[in-house]
Image (cartoon, one colour):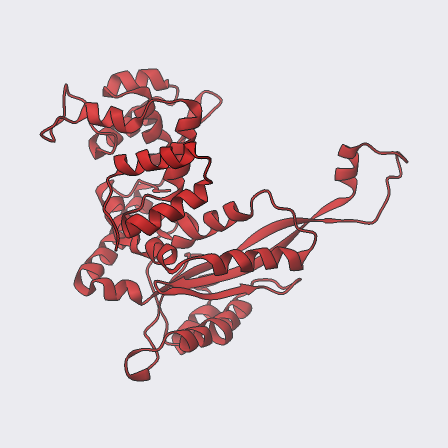
Length: 362
């Protein structure tokens, strides 16, 4: 049984656990066990902890002062998630790339901390050489995002949670490790430790593919060394690895094969003729996905960031040990964690629509 906690209450709990020196990953897991689907994202928890470390004022207190006891907004101020203030800030920055954070905050009547949160986390902008550099989407890209999300929202409203249970999502990504090389420096017989690091290490990468659905992990596959992820290999991955895994682990009603809706990135590899023929032969429906929309892929906004955070700072001596670590962490994912990442999709689709297609929810 889960407990519904407001964002403010969750922040208080996170602060308490942070002061007890508990790791952010463990904090997120403990909150997930209590709040279930209502748990805030791992990224937000990390941002809160950074606030605590930097001694910044509690953002929730700022929001509370902006909003009156009756739910109204005081003194013309607005809550930081108000679409109106997001649009005003976006228009202000687009009209003057050199506007300062202080000026922007005064002109839209919010605190600098709130402006910073909206500019960086909502609008996806950053400071480069005294100018705001955006991750801009063209009007056509925005319209495509809106149309796609509206189609998905309509389908979700018509089919309900049954629609989410059919979704299988995942992708391929690289993990880099360093392998020592057996060679000596020809310049210096006694190189420094820094020179040794440069001379005796080379980069190697493991390409792996992970797929899961709302019930749990389906496939974690290391692509063989020296193998390129071509359309032929991707078709093999679908036909000989993913579909058999689904048939083995998920049976439909009366023992029939379950319906599969694949949510994947809209890339050239996934749109080749070979891939499309394989999907058609396997009777796999693909969910529409807009280009430049990593915020609408669970593998991008949760799976791979979370997995790489787990192995961050670890060193691996070879390909085998790298994959062993990846395999260990993928098997440690709980069903609640995997399900929560997919159940967030309808909310993300609606938020893209609410913010006119321009919001990247990372």
